Length: 397
Ligand SMILES: *Cc1c(COP(=O)(O)O)cnc(C)c1O
Image (cartoon, rainbow, N blue to C red; front, side, top):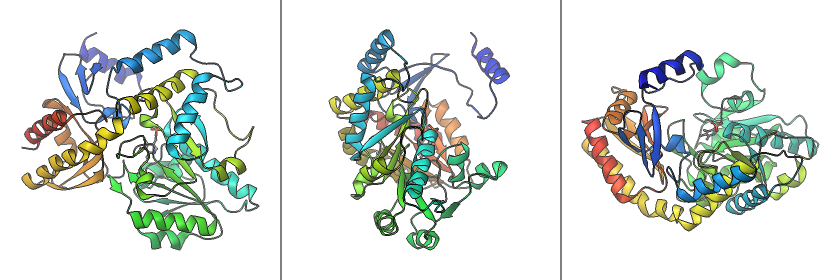
């Protein structure tokens, strides 16, 4: 099919909720994507932080093919081997106790919110239904997840949403403390805010919030849908701060390309919240996606994926910092590991830079607040970073 025909047909039949770039991708290999005209792109967006292993990993592909040959779906009324393996690996990586698999990050948030509400209910505090969330946060587009998303334009057309959500200032512990009372059920935050503009949590902030939750028996939900699964150089970014959430949510890179998310609970939550009949999902944790998850964990280990992030983070940071020094329109850099943002002067539209970069054969994306966002596959090399720097320099110039 002609490129223009594919684009037109999509616009004719798919609801227009995305302003898409005028490119049709056909295949991927390693850290490169190829469009319908055969043009090659270096991918520093990885499908919005999903394709951590890049494209076409032979072992990943073979595992999925094998699983398709044996079984893709049964139901959660029965057991399957990939589910047991995926859950064990995920629980061990989080340092928590029990996992529930979902089909997306949004649904992981929904489950976490329900678990927190059930905890207050079990504890004889059913009236405790306030959830403290952060400004600039992003947790998803469903009614529950949107209720705790700190982006007013996203929420406004859909109010009234879930009642009880209150917003505190990220990295301002006093603003969180001021909202916390006996009616607070949960505090939800991202360790490193993604969509909101790449804001890492301060160590003191996250530790103070953890202590406040312990003191007041508030459930701490940490959303690592974007910053988890090795992206920061830690399996989960909270591990860098030496704290543990009561519930962590995970998705994006969890299955490296199949639709899967999860929320993982600590022992306290697992033993006193959701029980049979409280929650469910027809697809959730089916053999196909769990085979992917299980394989992803194996490949992270075999291919030293997190080591690669740790080793190359200083190289990526230095490359991006050099752009801050060289171009007046690049005001600064924020981020952790392979989740980085360049702050662009408000006089220049980030989208114009993205379009120029695409012309140069480089994929980068944006985040709120005129930020150019970098979420490369976790398998990039030093040479890939150098190539990115050359292409992006041309786009900025
Ligand atoms: C992407 C994202 C979500 C939503 O995940 P979906 O898979 O799009 O539903 C939730 N939280 C964070 C931090 C995200 O980055």
